[in-house]
Image 1 (cartoon, rainbow, N blue to C red):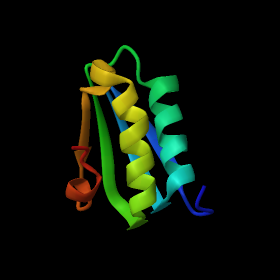
Image 2: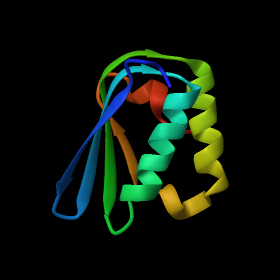
Image 3: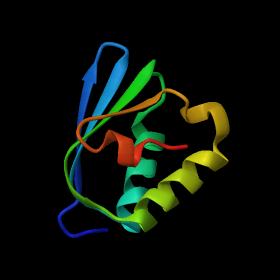
Length: 91
């Protein structure tokens, strides 16, 4: 993982909010995916705030897209928000 990457968690009623900090690379993508798996069940929506990401490496984005794509509709409740939402939004 990028040495400066971290995730802050906040629960609010029926939604989970994840705030990402630092640089997003392949290892960061694995960490985010595992965080969603570990803490994301039972929530109506999961918001992923990208405002504090410094750099988003294409490889990290590709890893996340591949991992989430294998899980199909299970992750259709993910909502990327913030200044980097377009770059992180999955196709």
